[in-house]
Amino acid sequence: MQEKIYTNYRLLLPHEEILGTIAIKDGIITDIQPGVVSQGQNGDGNYLLPGLIELHTDNLEKCVSPRPGVRFPIELAAVNHDRDLISSGITTVCDAIAIGDVNPKDDSLRIHHYGEMIDAIAEGQAAGRFSTSHYLHLSCELGYGLL
Image (cartoon, rainbow, N blue to C red):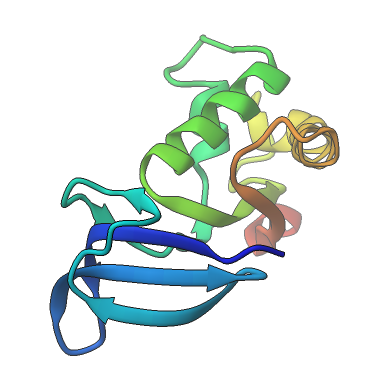
């Protein structure tokens, strides 16, 4: 694979921030240098940062039901959720899907739609609809079985 060069970017390094140039080959950083070169993609002094990892988010539930009594189609909500994540710089996410709820008598999104949310994430990922890499983080509400 051809080496890609990104120049005139602000780079946050472990101990300093520089205006510099970064070279990447086969997805691996091969060189970082201060200063601007004449070749490569010019960043115009903007930041070039690694993607962030979100280890636990309930945001999909909020996209499906942003307020009481409102329900968006789950597939549409999953794509909207993905767009929220990538616009925040999150490139990898563990989508927390609760199995059960604190009160089983509620008409809860968690109780009745968790399977559809899991399917929407899996199908969206497989179909390439997402910009972020999605993984499932299933959480069991222990109090659910005790009520």
